Image (cartoon, rainbow, N blue to C red):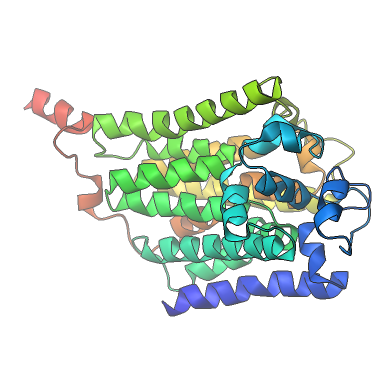
Length: 350
């Protein structure tokens, strides 16, 4: 589709501009001069161009990609091994695409993120009543900008989650379950999207349960295995990412730009949830859960928009769809089906 290709082309500008500004495409890895993974990455790319400071998480994904099923081998090069290994799908796929590592692995990260953008754009274009320009909004979202410039997993996870959203709207429950399970293995916070979509009207009871239990069980099993291999707590550094509502945003460490963009993002998520509450209640739940995640982030995340908005702003395009879509969801999308909770209630009252 033309709009999908245009969205990918627009998203591609971010890594190109970042590489130009950083003086090398190596800056896409975000490997800092004092980063936790510098020694491991330098062994494979001795002439790597480093960024100032500790860098970002792309360098840690690089190490995991080289040891996807051997957490102890990578642990010394990771700041929070159990936490980092939780997002295994992104480095696992990139490692399979570039089995010899090196700069080919950096390119694989970018290719996977662009695939996520394409998948997300395709899903957005298929939503009922979506304007033709809606997929383009994904290309300018912080979640895409940061993923493509720092080799992060969020763009791929977002594309998979949006594919799950479309599958639910089209009542393809198995496809939704598969897409959301993969999204959760790419970034664990997308379990909130699965939880919200389980409220879809007309969804059979067994799929409603499976849509939540499936991704959560797979994530829990993988996390437990990694924690066992590392002899470390399962939670890892996760607890430090959350705080009491608004406490993280009121910290003096939060940059003004991050606070301003956070307020705008929260307003869009809230407005989208309110608009969808009757015609698409499951989307309203998804957006509400994203809003709750946003306000409960700690200052370890909120201090910069590059972290806060990629964590809790991935579903902003869905909120935009809710606000600008043409008409309401068709009656067929809301009608109960045999085996659903709603169908059982109607039968009992007949």
